[in-house]
Structure formats: structure tokens, C-alpha cells
Image (cartoon, rainbow, N blue to C red):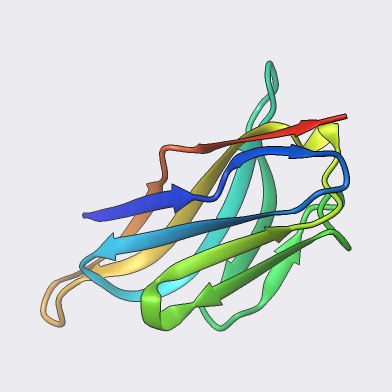
Length: 123
């Protein structure tokens, strides 16, 4: 069982910054990847940024140049630094983790989602 705890959302003015955090807990042997998705009001969930366990990042076009994803493997925590925010970034942001869990003798792959954190950008 892997649980994700997100924090860092809130209300910010256009042009401002926020930093989201997502800590994974449970029987985690290794992280394959951790990602941030977002779901704007009335729209489908969409990928924002992803980082592999070895630290390779990838971004949606909307996030390139403004957002930065990083991973602290020692703490099983992923961060999303969001700068130059605009009202189109308003959404519920969800953390996703793909991990190898279990014990040395019994391993399994797990995909987990956080409960989401609201980000609201005012104009």
C-alpha cells in the first residue's frame, strides 16, 4: 500500500508562484516515476510534469519554461515549482506515483494517486 500526501496549493495572483509537494509513504522499494496532473473545472485530467526515478523530467507544453519538477529520492517526495502562474493554471493538482513496493521477498508494482490540492490563480 502506497499513500500520497500533497501540500502547497492555494490562491495566488497572476504572475505569482507556488510550490507543490507530494510525499509518498508505505512499503516503497524504488520509484519508477512521480508525476503531477491537473484537472481544470469542467475538463479532463491532464499531465503537467513527470520525473523518473533517476531524475529525468518531462513537461507538458503548457508547463515548459514556467514549471520545474524535482524528486528527493531519500524522502520519496516530488516537488512542483510553478512560476509565472496565470488564470489558465487554475485546477485541482493531483500527484501520481509509480513505484516498486513490498519487501525483498515479495515485490509488486503499484500506482497511486493523491487526493488533490486546489490551485487558484486570480487575474
